[in-house]
Length: 276
Image (spheres, rainbow, N blue to C red):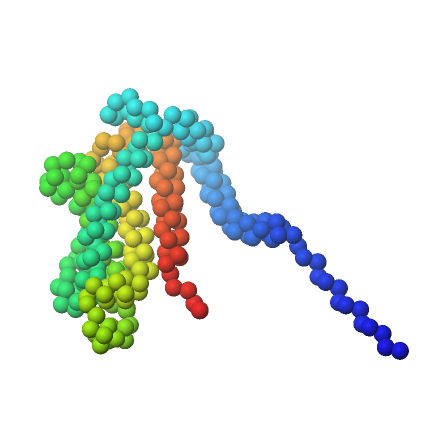
């Protein structure tokens, strides 16, 4: 007599929320451990050096600072919120000018060999120059501290855009351009249908590097030019020997830079090529 085999027992499936919590824990464990080590080292240093405040007292000072971030008691006494917005405004304007000039320049340099030969040595010469070296020239040219700071952002953040865009154009397969030549496509059609889709990932990378450079430059520029801005506020707190606020400024600069980089990294992943 034939007996039917019993169906195999189904494997118990973990609940979806458990899988989600497991992935979340795996993603957060490493960064949490790194920040814990940083705070521990900070605490140990503050215990050895009395002038450096510890994490707890700095946190309480930050809470007090951000209770009223947008007060305005005059030109040199405004809330931390106004200082952050002033810096972001300068960064946005300087970066916008760099993008307006740098993106077309990158496409032209990458597309035409003669322009590449002409401008590549100039870019290699000017790119390593420190932003603090450009600032006095900006003051001389524009006779205004705010314009000089924007000039320093522009001149320092334009190079990553130009270099990455030109490199992306050079990496476009020659077969694509040969087909465009056979089809007698106009230069605008070549740009819109071939160059732009191929170069977009390189362009996003250049923009990401440029934004990071702009945020670095503005802090240094504001420390020298004065006025309103996170760099000026940091330097002013140093003159007041307020070390807690200096540490808070360092963290603010780092967090804003991290958020800008994360946003552009997500944008870069959105437009990166994926394997089939």
